[in-house]
Image 1 (spheres, rainbow, N blue to C red):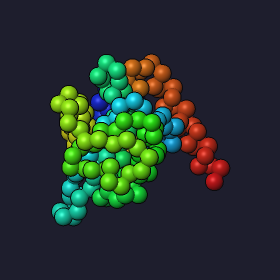
Image 2: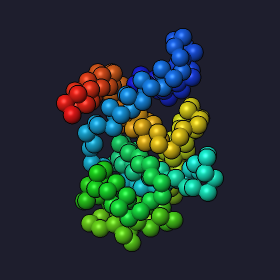
Image 3: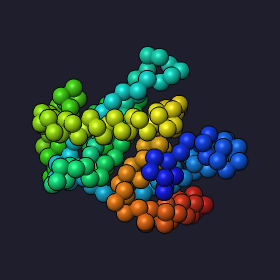
Length: 198
């Protein structure tokens, strides 16, 4: 999960190591819960916020939304990024996501379809109109979709956030891969300690 560039599905891991798929999945789930406890770094400078809908397979009319915030560096590349899964997006969901991940002194660009500026306070928000920013956002969202539904295929809604945490843990450390495994293990140990202390 931490050293593979694209990770592997639980069925592929089960086949590779000769372990039951359910055992692999349950252990992977424990790791994802530990990754959710990581400290988040505020995105600064220029930040793109975009979203896309996924349909819940068992309830055809129910829309679930993934909201993504990505930092644009001075060289035009994407820096750190975070994702949030929600069953629809309310004012409270979006406001909380901004407060957890985006510094208030940041210039935020959002898709025209999602006019966050109407209900988000304390942020400078503008619609994405620059073609380069639109391309950056579209490319990032496409890569995320391909990973979620290409590598892992069918994910129940209640587990999507865990996969987002896994994806962005690896994505935000892509330039420092030699330390990823140690940080991975450290978070797992801290999560275990916190659970036993309850």
